[in-house]
Amino acid sequence: MWQRYTLYDVRVICHYLGVLIQYTGLAMIIPFVTALIFSEWEPASRYLISIGLALCLGSGLRMLRIESGRLNRQQAIAVTVFAWIVVACVAAVPLSLTNHYNSYGDALFDSIALFTTTGLSIMSDPDHLSIADNMWRFAAAYAGGVGLIVVGMSFGLFGRVSDSSLYESEGRSDHVLPNVVETARFIALFSASAIAVASVILAIALTVHGIEPVRAALQGVWLSIAGFMTVGMTAPSTNIVYYHSTFVELVLMVLMVMGSINFAVQSEILHGRVGSLFRDTEIKAGIIWSAVMLVIFIFALSASNLFNSLPDMLRTGLFNFVAAVTTTGFTKLTSSQLATIVPSGALLVFAIAMAVGGSSGSTAGGVKLKRVAVIALSAYETLKSVASPQSARLVTNYHHIGRRRLGEDEVKSAMTVFIMFVLVYIVGALVGVAYGYDAVSAVTESIAMASNGGISTGITSADMPALLKVVYAIEMWAGRLEYVTLLAVGIKIFVSLKPRAPKRLRQWRKDRSR
Image (cartoon, rainbow, N blue to C red; front, side, top):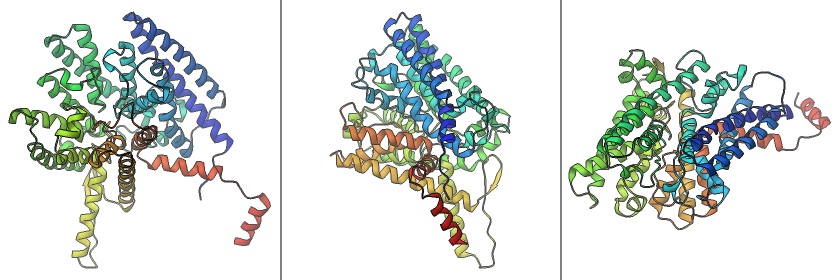
């Protein structure tokens, strides 16, 4: 029986959303200071105003609940669901005040794309965006990649309420360390360390390629964030093509792969247990899946006249495939090339690769390899049971941060999320087709949104229909939450809004049922 949200629940949820809004405002100090350093006075004023608005709004919401306490599971789930929208709404304010967006709604679309690590943008003239605005966009992408709740827990924003309910409500189940707060801090610290090392390497490489040191340093940081957090956006509008560097592409491919691996597995490797990487069922499934899809992709790509030589095709194909399978969204092909020149078979491989995505507990999106592996193991177990005697007792084990037994609940959960992803992919594609877009392009675009993959065929733009913007924004939000959390809150809100029967009638029904 679904319980209703009470007024007390609403106050608790608003209180913790207020905490997140306040710290979103404090995070805007980063672009504000950046604007002051580079003498960008107009952006500085926008961020100063936005900081004030965020602090005032957050303080107002926090006043709805003064007493301390712990979040129960239902409250934690609601905080997680609404956090992604509320924080995106606040983060969109300074962006909407620029002349790069037609409306606040367009800025909000971009903000949702940033926090969900989809990385797509509908801004105009991105090449002339201020350094401060770019810094804010990539800071938002970092927070979204790590996870808003994980970031909040790592900084102690939730105080004594930081328990597994909050951590698991964001789609994470693997604990790197026994304590969830320590786990959250490890994820944030490990991500920051990987980005810092990559930033230095890329800054040096870009300087060698002729970019002035300050710009090279900034773009090194931004590229590192975009790679490890599987966001896939760049400051230049031409994406990776702008750099013309094989070395940069190699570094980014390493970052993309690292970002798409479960943080728990990465912790095992850091502690010297490298063998766990090769025993892990999810990793093995990912290697086999990627190898098969890459071969198909290369064969499909060879049918086009887009490349001058085999090495050029292999280099471009490999980079784009890694970006797709890790749901990063980097691309060396323009949207028009994807929609017109690239064979439909290669485009479908892109879409399927994004649909599956990377590892669970990573920065990647999509259905996740662990769920696909669980479903495959369940199917194999079913086939074995058919071929075995009725008296046989079948047990299926797999490796994932230790030896595990395949359970019925785990299979049900994997199938539920898988079906939800497929349904949303189809609905988004049908909306695109209804507006007259090509079917293959509409399917690819829908998958890019719901999987947070971010590889666009050109449908996503400031000129696309308003309803399509709303549908794509919901797909990005729902895909980041992996549907179950969102559906749970939606059903509970519906139950809460449904009028209750009078107390006497409820008591009569209760007595009658006895």
